[in-house]
Image (cartoon, rainbow, N blue to C red; front, side):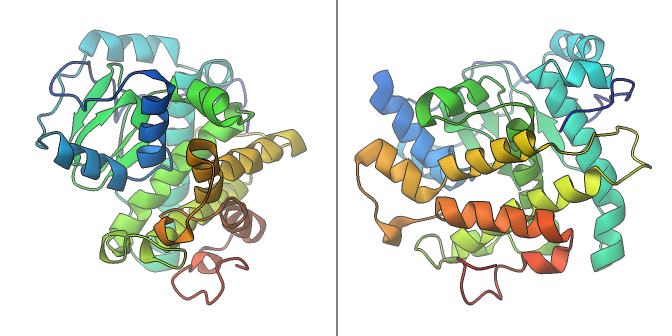
Amino acid sequence: MAFTDDSRLDTSGIRRSGGGGRGVAVGGGIGGVLIMLVAGLLFGQDGINAVNQMNGGGYSYEQVDGVAEDQLAQECQTGADANSNSDCNMVGTKNSLDAFWQDYLIENTGIQYSAPALDLFQGSTVSTGCGNASESTGPFYCPVDKTAYVKTTFFDLMQTQLGAQGGQSAEQYVLAHEYGHHIQNQLGNLKYSQYDPQGADSGAVRVELQADCYAGLWARNAQEDSNSPVQVKPMTEDELNRVIDAADKIGDDHIQMTSQGHTDSSTYTHGTSAQRVAWYMAGYNSGDMQKCDTFAASDLNNP
């Protein structure tokens, strides 16, 4: 969704960690990239944890680049900036997500919203409370430090490696999904991805599909929220199609077919392409958090 040109962006709560440190070792070539995409592209941290166990684990927080943060504040001031720059799009999207969940969460659950941090990390690796991650891992949320990690060059990989159309709305979907995990963390649902970590009907899949639904929930309500400090324009048909395309391209079945030429539903952790689209649309069409209860769903194919 495009922002109104005169929206004022706020970069507080957003950092740009520098590179270096003990990174995850990733093999060279297309194969190595795809392996990491399969591990983390689907916006979870499970793959990161598994890779870290093989590479020594542990973490130390990266040094925050104050110069880079000052530059971000200078670059990202208005909605017009967000409409033309991926980093600024993330800033505007965070502002909109915070404004939405600040009111919506307490009104619908009685729980006070606590905004997560956003790290638009710049190096080839990043150290987090959940372990080390490579830039090829893809965006993820860490519940330990309550931070969403995004390197915006990933959006190019999503297009070149998996054939997604990309675009502003698709990028927003990525961050909105990570915010969905933060909401689950506040509600106590995120733990189910660890209790039941894989399988077509697993807790992990239900957690991921609920985060997709929450992303759609935000998109529906954000364009109707006249009180937000950042205003988004109504979503166009093309913008919605780009979100649907992105969700389709990151389903377990599509990822597995792309990387290994066959699928195995017993190893699913995030849901099929059709399921990810369906649950995003459940949130988008209803604008109702109650429609996102994947844990009560008897059929994940039909929200």
